[in-house]
Figure 1 (cartoon, rainbow, N blue to C red):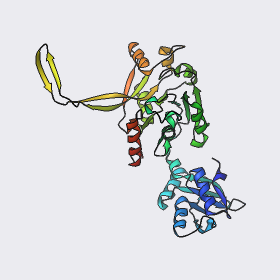
Figure 2 (figure 1 turned 45 degrees about the horizontal axis):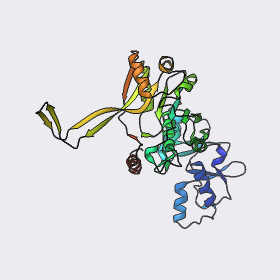
Figure 3 (figure 1 turned 180 degrees about the vertical axis):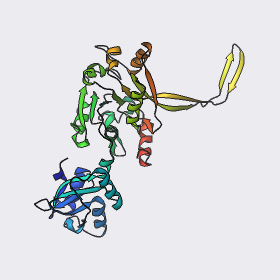
Figure 4 (figure 1 turned 60 degrees about the vertical axis):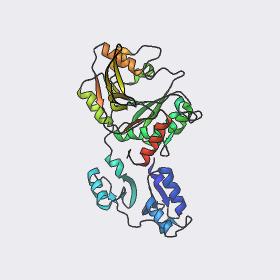
Length: 349
């Protein structure tokens, strides 16, 4: 997004300012003159308050803007900018040089970790047949959770962790995914697509993607919601010098019946409605490039359990990373309903 996209002229209306805020998603417009001199700023909160006061949508925005916003000089260091923003409880800080706006700093952006050299791969090619009829005309990764596609939530999570290079493997209704995300510029990342003519298993895309990676990369299913600490998982992989790290989450099964043990015709024991606790595969992996040479066949299908089993057979170092944060696989209608409830309750914030 260019700086100019945040600007509106001093003759702009409240409606035009709201439209610009909606388009950029940054929550603010800067009101400037023809020389880019700052006349004021209007946040989405400022505009809402003005409308509640009775200011019309077609009224000039200068009746709703802050005419004396906090600004900072060019070259200010990020820590100093954060101190200024915290002191005034603001999330946007215009940078002004010689009276003209040259940049805008955003609180959330300043808090983001530095970019990672590692890439992330999202597997988003599945048919999602268990979610019919919702997936008859919409690919599962574009089903909305809290008004936003689940795949967009994953892209945002990856970006906030520091990933900037993302590869999305696509198959079913792939044109819809590619049209929605484009090259990733709108989301602050660089997205490339790897179309599969035929489904090739949960790890089939690795057959062609092997040439793209020279450092460990993250591989994640495109139909999960999670607050997994991806950076910590990469560090865990590095610390253990692993060939593959498998994300795991706890899963409990409550048996609704009593379990009996039978020895021939003799009843040997009864356990009433037991509870079983397991660790399950979360569909999140860190993979070292060497894995390609060890297990990936030149052609055919490939599933992640096969990759894991082959590495273990070859006595390669495979480790389990415990995911303690929120995690949900969206594979069935009840999962989708739970995801919307969880988002509404703020569990993913």
